[in-house]
Image 1 (tube, rainbow, N blue to C red):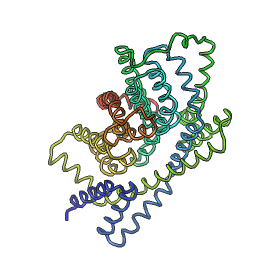
Image 2 (image 1 turned 180 degrees about the horizontal axis):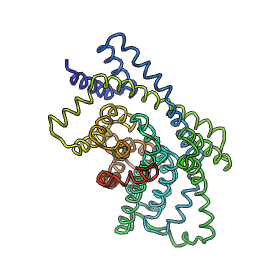
Image 3 (image 1 turned 45 degrees about the vertical axis):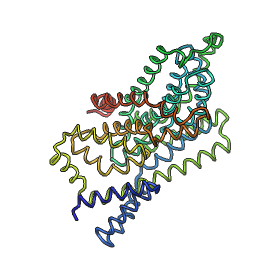
Image 4 (image 1 turned 120 degrees about the vertical axis):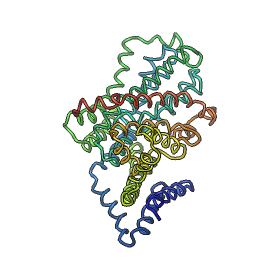
Length: 440
């Protein structure tokens, strides 16, 4: 049996196991270890152990639980409530202003969090009830919250970019900087769409009534204090890292401490908040570690087979595809997989194939990390099984149906696709900032 056929059998076996409902790390790890034993005999039994030791010695892995802890601490202590009130007062007088303010809230939460789940939870529990009470169209605001929460995996400190950096062996600092302008571009496109849509159809996002807009400038300026905590957390973490005072792991520890101190000073660091934060952090961190372990074992088998060279030869030599055509096919495959899998599963399944292939094709792996993340944002919202769709269904009030949720994401998926095309066509959108900071 040829190595190419073995690689195809491994990949198809893994996908079949995933479709049966097996856990991602179980399916990937089992196929990797079983294939290694069948190919190389008893000596291959050490492959899984070797991957585990490599994972345990991976010093940057410490950043994952610390960033996850920081995100859940901010979410569980309700620090976002104050932020939403600030955006509510400042943006309320505009048609669609509260929806625009919600996007602003999501950008700030993303800059403190790094996860889309926390942004979704905050948007669904704080912003959604308020927007519906103010007469906003339920389909539009459902799309706003889903699209806004997806920014959490692109705007630094993105946990997804940290994970990509670990698997692709790329510097996380450059990945974070590369995500800044694409994240702001995506948020700006959302704001422009909302503003234009509500200008054409004011009933979709009515402005606040006149009596509620009578807020003095002193009160407005007082509410701006809500932004001090996020700025403090963001600078203490990302700022110190970029200034060279801390490395990536130290930066994540500073962020976790800053989030805890913010909750303490606001009087919200209760026993319940701490227990929930630690419990969720342990659960998510353990999931990430098992998935990375399985991905390392699977990648080692693929490297041993020479599958990457075979795929490169197939697409370039036999099929005659150009590098850009292959890149577009990769992004389309992510969107297809996003109908069934989350971003982490997609990355560990195809990383052994795509990351070396992207390098061979001559593309920058930091830039490709941003493309991957944007495509994950789109895949999160793609029916029938987009990750964000079901999160929203679980958190939304009963009057918002699954059909409403599916309809709500259509314009935002189109906007995000435009953002992806812009970053592909103009790589400097992503690469200018890391090039300026780290030097060409």
